[in-house]
Length: 338
Ligand code: UT7
Image (tube, rainbow, N blue to C red; front, side):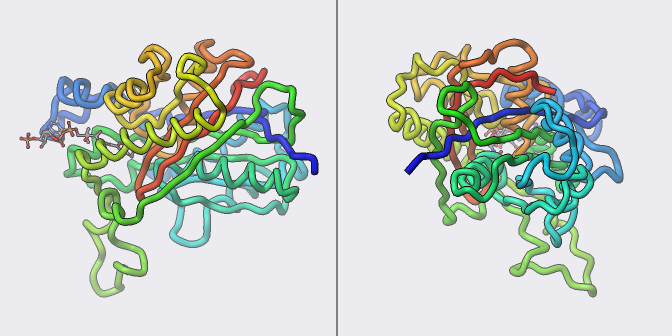
């Protein structure tokens, strides 16, 4: 039987206009630019203002990805929309159908993926599998977040790390020869670590009641130190699995594009894999940790500065709440990111 190949054929990204510097956070939190920069590598992040929802960022990034793929936002442009997010517009319904409708994509299947910071890789796997199975020929895969809406304003650890933003790619049925092919993926989870990254309230275990307005339970919490250790271990292992599957040596990886959580994590993963640190794409200094939007935003920055060229061998990896993790390998396509 002929095996269907899937290629990345478009990339778009969007950041909300309001840039939040480290110094501006020091005004209201007990923190310093020195601590944030040295412990995380982050210098600024972007936060959506009041009234801006995740779908608003997703629509912008989606438009740009379609444009980058040479597609008009119209019915028939794509036949699947998958949105990875931890900050959906509502607990119900999913945000993806709204995004598909506002992009004018017609009555396509559209659903959300909840895998926290690994969400983009999970969405990539789901969409590419639907293409391989013949359920779609072209898919729009979006990672979009507004963590600013779930941060506890009193929690200095999370406030300094997370940012808002959206990135999107178009996946299409491909010929085996073209650059941009998705070559291998690995995904995993460990639910015993569910409490390390959580929003405890609002779900079936901690439902908000009409009687007592839920407050703290609706904020995002993270046990940073434990997450750090797990993130390095899982991203390194998952990446190694993908490299082994392809028979790639570390020096065959042109760019390591990891989830932008912490520069120390990314350096440790590169070191663990034997990939020189200079080949790890870093844009968290500018955008912070944007969770499911992180990888496409990093790809967009690396494409914009000319680092990614057609045929470049790219290793993606992510780790997040769940716990979840994953890695993927692809070659860079001949596209202009928007
Ligand atoms: O995106 C999903 C995956 N997420 C991640 O991968 C995040 C992983 N974790 C991390 O990146 C790091 O653990 C953090 C950046 C969150 C924290 O860095 P750390 O080096 O692990 O610091 P720590 O939590 O061990 O805290 C060290 C000290 C503590 O003070 P004491 O107990 O030593 O007196 C904290 O209270 O730093 C303090 N601290 C801060 N100080 C100034 C924590 N946050 C801050 C802050 N400003 N913002």
